[in-house]
Image 1 (spheres, one colour):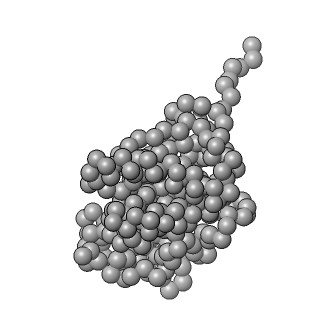
Image 2 (tube, rainbow, N blue to C red):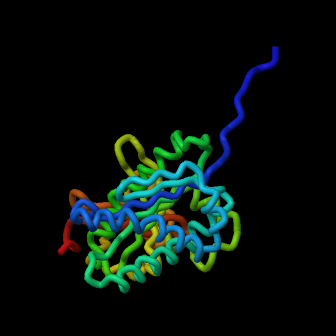
Length: 262
């Protein structure tokens, strides 16, 4: 008797967005954000040259302050390389058109994996875990909302698929993404954080401070000539980042509570 098996569901690129500080708005403000999210996504994805794919999106789900949908995975280079800055520009235009309104800031997560047409599955759960990461919340909480309106996190799989493919992705570079270990509930996986237009090497030292490297990270750092682990430990509530270069992990930073917070 031949063994039985089931075909794997098609791979989907999953895009999720969520509005910061939605609960602080009054009812009219909430209604306006809810009405604006889909047009903002359509405008930004159109500027990223993926309108046709967006029109064929799968399992779109619109909550009051968020939206998630699946797309063909072939658009990942555009989602990673073109979409974040296009969304930043769309949000900036929204602010300029309504200067009296509270600026809208969006968190974005991008993941990929096999999903059925319902969208129910582990990759969808992981997409939302990435979106709930403290790093994105901390970045936007500390930022000037009139300047920094977009913070993006992509899974390690998306990062590797896009940048190791060699496919054109606009003009974004791997170094514009900061590696970060996401810990949300039982979920714990590395991911990459991106703020459009931001150079992580120019981070204010009052915001990013050396983080004590441990375990494997210590061994990686020790392999770099002249490098040594830092003895400082992060303050409670901080978010940890590591910066990768041609010699592996080269810097460790934390973001959030502590000396850099004002």
